[in-house]
Image (tube, rainbow, N blue to C red):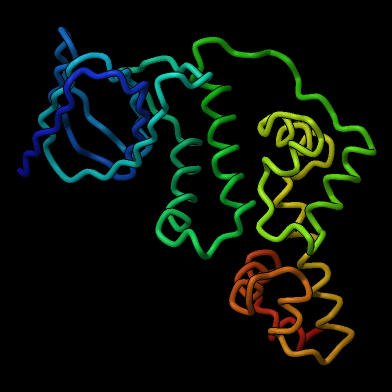
Length: 242
């Protein structure tokens, strides 16, 4: 049985969230004055402060995604010794391709990974939970947001850019846009881009690379990947059967 020693001394570094990506390893843990054993399954999580000494002997193979929150972050999470969060585990699993190849994703899509993560942690693991329902955007705000999302003038657009234009915090804009339209900003943008691609595939003989660029995708492979994700088939095959 493989044994691995893990430890961090007490320090002023905020909090850490760990999400187990593999099942079946055991830890003998010393956290400050507490000592306990824990078996980690897939999607087991731990949340702890960095302000006490931490040491553990891990038995077996393990793989974790670790998320660190700075000392002065506004989101304070409840420390946990033994918990499982399947929704969070699935969320971070979808983030792994982005972490491995961030250049393959739109900046807006990458932003949404972070926004979804923060909203989930704030809703399910915060010290104090907000019971306020997200406000809906006004028609003028929705129109301005969609204009910015679709405009070629805003290449590399981030959630912060649109939120700032509407004078809203980033996470508030994200939640309000989703509440108002039924989709996140990136989901809405991707739907519009794919629909434009479908029209051009059906009505023109343009090469795929030209269609990709005219619809706002970074290149043909990006268009193919997103189109296949949405339609279930590649653009070339879809064009033949359209």
